[in-house]
Image (cartoon, rainbow, N blue to C red; front, side, top):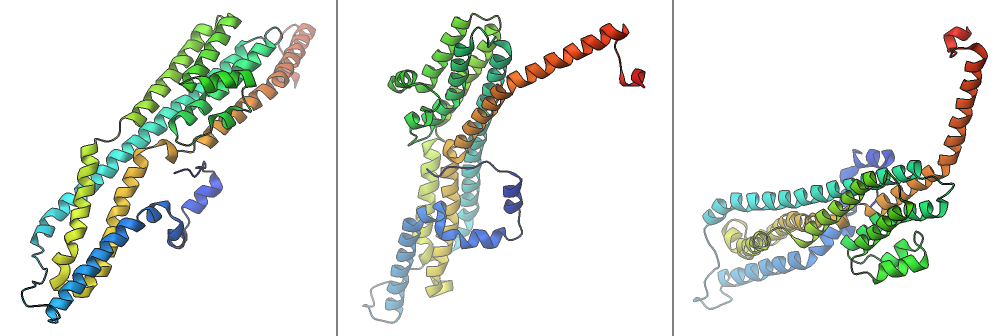
Amino acid sequence: MKKKRSLYNHEKWVEHRSSFRHIRHLLSSLSSRVILSLVPPVIAFTSVAVVIASYNSAVEMHFLPVFFPVLRASPLPYQLTAPALALLLVFRTEASYSRFEAGKRAWTKVISGTNDFARQVISGVDGSSNSALKSELLRYIMAFPVALKCHVTYGSDVGQDLQNLLEAGDLAIVLKSRHRPRCTIEFISQCLQLLNLDESKRSESKISCFHEGIGECEQLMGIPIPLSYTRLTSRFLVLWHLTLPIILWDDCHWIVVPSTFISAASLFCIEEVGVLIEEPFPMLALDELCNAVQSNIWEAIATEKEIQAHLVAKRKRHSCEHSTNGWPTTPKQKE
């Protein structure tokens, strides 16, 4: 869960859809977090199958007194409940994926709002008279996604992530705050008031977008899938695999051991994937999204003066051509 995710580029998509992906995925099974997290329960259920198979073999070979019964049962109950278990796992995974989609939409809104807000500040604030305050405002805007990312992911070091964006005094105030994303928004609001811009009213909509992003992320963090649903799925799977060796004994005998292992590994993997994506934010490449936002804003700041100078020179050139000929010149008129 603590592994940093990466955004896909063209090369990664080519690797993702490669025809050799099945071999690659099989060879990397031992490093899969899903598989490694299921080692204890799968070993436990396989051990139960070994104990039941050993007991039944001992009874059938008369190593135990005759009053010890062979543990066997009709497979009919399993045939009736198998579709229910399959539907339960499908609905559980689908509900988890809908939460993953909701988290992705919330962060798409936050990232697009950050980029648009920074664009408004870069183009709407006069850098000659408010250069220092404009620079600080842009840093606060870049700091908001980072603060929100640390707020919704466990184990994040907000001080380390923000130290390159905020000054020491600003960072101390943010770290002292109980809600760091809202504290960063307060810095942004105070900067807008000091700038006293006409565009500040339009910028308030971006601040509202930030608050909406916080609300959606906190709702996903604080309200999981109903716990009764998760508990029912877990109990169903546990009881299913505890009794599976008894149900399969007459038909499989010692094959119940590998059968239980395969069934537990496959079904618990599906349930484990649902549990993992139920908490969407560790599954998203939030670090790279925040870094991409910062790169875009720094690039826009660096090219702002260059583009302005180019456009001013272009306008002067057109003005000179207009004054010389008395009308605007076009490529066709020049010919």
